[in-house]
Length: 239
Image (cartoon, rainbow, N blue to C red; front, side, top):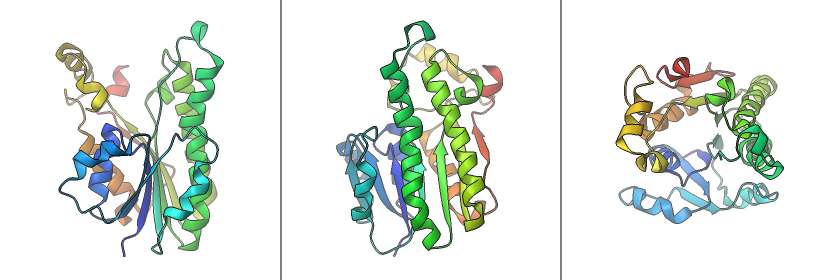
């Protein structure tokens, strides 16, 4: 029986690539707001090891339903990928946008980690991957987004510190500009301008993010915890 991994944000462009990649090695519980979006990318993949859960993770009671989606195999890890960038510059920022940013980007990951921890402890190991953003370090015009991603960094380090003695690892991944549904709508000029800010002069492929997440879940990264994995190809230095 395959070990299990829970992924939030599984139905976005990056999430679909991650789900598809991880299904080779794990049973996946895919969480997202548009589960039908998974179908096209899984046509040639065996989906018997896929469970889905369509939900807005900003709601308060979604985690309680996860126990019904687990099977008897061990929970191996979780990937907190879901994120939202909403709000405006400080003068125009509303309380609603601030609160929603934190609900999705910080509170939901905390709830999933809190739910997962006893399951991971039961099996004596686990890997928690939180997907942050360079703006959590550098700041951004949308302070609600930057502040929530910075808080996710603090959550990751705290979880790594607390759960390390249980052989449960927690790491933060910072993706660079990646080709997703959103970036495919950009003009070629905009894509080139953003790509030029990286040392590799190109955008990241979602499959490359999937490969890094697979590494962080695997035993090949068994001594990595409390790490900030920079996948920005140098673009953080150019901000």
